Each structure stands twice: as structure tokens, then as C-alpha cells.
Length: 311
Ligand code: SF4
Image (cartoon, rainbow, N blue to C red):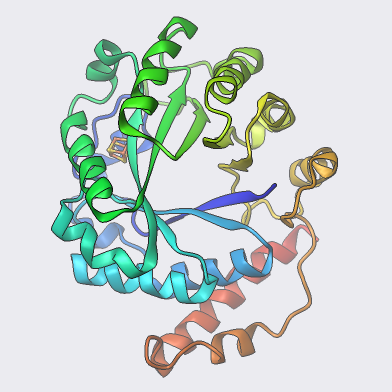
């Protein structure tokens, strides 16, 4: 069992109106999407740390319009080369032609479904329409790549909506699902996360109906006690931890201990003694220029300093 880390390439979203989302509180502050994007060196540094600490990459994720398609293909190729792991894409709705460009480096496409109570979904994701996601799923079928979906629990749905999830997963032949327990952000209309038992119930029912579906489940560092519960309910991996910023913090120390009985393979607490600069030097110079490698080393040093702070 692993911790899966999402790699974000930007903090911008052109939609910006999902009522639960932090981005919806920031939209007016970010006028230029290019200003909200992260440098590739930071993302590659994060991918190197993830590999060394045995964190899987959940998906490469980011808001619409921050990078050109060719830049994103380069980014995903770089992450693939660093990790040796084909990547999942969570970058909005993609056409078949667009998806095709990523093909050698991707395992699948993740559609941000978020809510399966369809009336409620129209309210909480007014601009993130389902149709383009379904089109991308159809393109995945044609291209022979996998499909994943995200689902947030705690938006106002009830367990009666589980039947909608069941039909959706069946109809679209979903291979992986990521559950999130709602993390209510200040300035949004949400104030309470779902309780642990209710959250786990969704996972339990999903596992019972789809024993082969890969289930990833996230909570947050203020809900550390949820993780054990979701694994007992049937989740395969966990996600949604600020694993660099909180590395070796009391919360993650507790979690690392709690997860021992689940054969937890990821390291959230003790920084491996490796020659980080050599890891960068070893990267293919066809993809990573000397200049980019130097930038990655600098970024790595910053992250590692942050990770050692709690040690
Ligand atoms: S599309 Fe995604 S990033 Fe944009 S507001 Fe909705 S949830 Fe947030």
C-alpha cells in the first residue's frame, strides 16, 4: 500500500466556480494564468523526491490554460522518465487528438466527476460540465488507456446516491477512483467535513461491488484518523497529504505508525540518505538540459531543507 502524491503544475483554473474549491476564492487575484504556473524544475524536483520516498504519483494535475499542450507533453514525459511510471492526467477535458500526444507516457485519464448526485453537481460544479469528461472517457476507450474519476464526499449527497456511482462506474468502465473527504475551505459555503464512518461507507460499498477497481482515498492532516478507517473499508492507496511540507511532522509520524499493519511502503518520516545531485545528473540529457538540471538541483535543495526542518 502506498501514498500517492498529486503533482500540480499550476494554481490557476479558468473555470474557478466550483463552490467547494479553494480556487474559487482566488480567481479574482489571478488574472494571468501564466503567473500561477509552477516552474518545471519544481515539479521535476518533486517527482524525484516522490520516487526516492516511494510515493506514487497520483496524477499530473493543473488548471486549464496555464501551459501549451506541447509544454504539458514535455512535462509528463519528464515525470515519466524520472519515476519510470506511466502517468495519469488530470488536466481538464482532452480531445482524442490531444490525448494521443501523451500516449507513450500515460496510463490513463482522470475525469473530475466530483459528485454523482447530478442535480447537486450542477450546483457545486456549475461550469465543469460532465459532457467533455464523458467525451474524454470515450477517447480513452478508442486509444486503449485507462479511466479514473474523482469523487468528493461531503458536498450534500447522501449514501442513497451510491447507486448512481455504481451505474456510472459500470457504464464508463472506470478503472480507478479517488475519493476525497471534503476539506471545507474558508470563504466557501461549506463548513463541515463528512464524518469518518459515512466517508468510509462509500469506500466499503464501492469495494464490495467492484473488488477489482483501484481505490485511492484522501482526507487531510487534520483528519489523520480517517486513513486507517478508509484502508479497513477497502482503499488500496492513500492520498492528499502535504507530504513535503509536513514530512516527519507529528501527524505524519503518527500516520506512518498507524499504517504499518497495512504493509505501508511509502516513507513520510525519514529522509533517505542519497546523493540527490547525482540523481539529477543521471537524468537523460536529451530531455533535461544542463540548465534545467541546475535549476532542479536548486529546487531540490529548497524542498529537502523544508523536509529536514521537522527532523
Ligand atoms: S475546475 Fe477544478 S480547480 Fe477549477 S474551480 Fe472547479 S474544482 Fe477548482
